[in-house]
Image 1 (cartoon, rainbow, N blue to C red):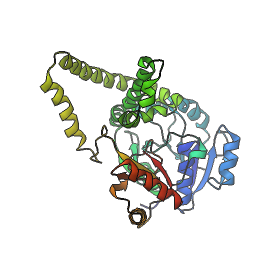
Image 2 (image 1 turned 120 degrees about the vertical axis):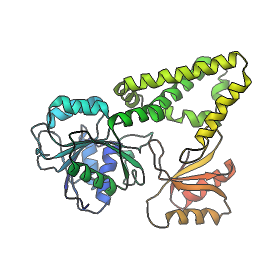
Image 3 (image 1 turned 135 degrees about the horizontal axis):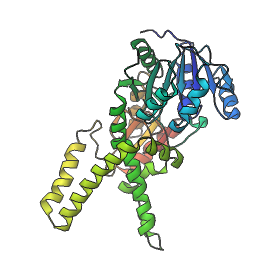
Image 4 (image 1 turned 30 degrees about the vertical axis):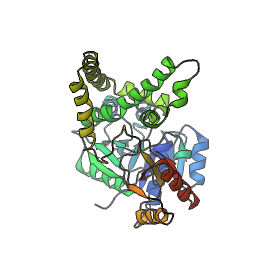
Length: 366
């Protein structure tokens, strides 16, 4: 469908809100974007960069003519934001959010009594960095963008949000709020807890010579990288999805206890089966890459345009750098780039980074 909306409001100009503004502007579809943020300096910067057309320091003024408003604030701040908007926007203005949990947001929307059309949303893209400075127009390119309509969501509103998501370059996926939060708990929230637990374990068990921190590399660094994310953000996410995370942790503890018992009993077959089943299941995942094996990957921040993969591959080939795999990242919640390249060894990765950076690309080790 052709987007039938032109005036877009964005509440919160951080990494996600700023990237939504830039992505919609870059689409060239003539969107007029009005923004609100607590930080006037951020608003002025966004205006000077032409990421937005106007801004307001008050949610009660300036958003009355918006067709769609993106709520890009933490879940714990959503209630107050909605109360300020209530009665100050058109009745048919579509509201959508970008929060990491969806059931809590839906409860908040229903609790405020606001009757505007609402479509829950969560882009699976992001970075360990935060703030408008980290935002970029291609953050969502080829990234999955979960949409969680509820029983009150009308088809027209859902279709409009889907098309706006496509205008950003993202891929809309429609699921229920419960399905989203359950999946997020297993593949995102609990892994963050585990990564932080492993890092804290080093802190607790390391000796005065800090030998564990000194030799920590390879697989340990790979599986604990996400522990570098914002403590404020992740404490809010975990509390918002508390019940489902607790259920997931219970299942995790049961599996850990079973492994502990098998290890205590010296049951080689069961211990071997534990690792074998994980290996076999992991090989069926989208990328077919074993998370726990040492990998030599980089991510490259590039625009999605015809031939870009060929351009990158050719640049590396001209330097006799062999690559194992190259492809688009669809889930980029903590990867700062749209393209992932896998190399055979550390030397090849280093040469790849050097080559791409010399050509002006933003490339980082993964």
